[in-house]
Image (tube, rainbow, N blue to C red; front, top):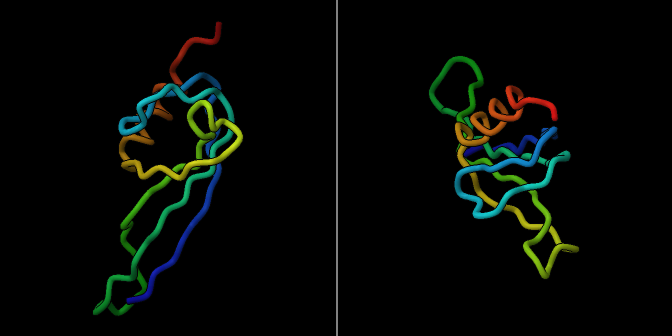
Length: 89
């Protein structure tokens, strides 16, 4: 099975909550890592997402370390939408 990993950065303008993460994430830029596997048997290359993770600062007292936490892609999209429509105070 052929797999690939994509990386992207998302930025939250406001503190964010993402389902599956038990703490409020501060506003800022976060690296998103997405693993995908090739769907075999097609006449063209096509991939399906098998995992989405976010890199976040460690929970206190380990705030100088980084954690990779598995999240749902829909949960990430929901958090991005909430951030986009949140009023700037």
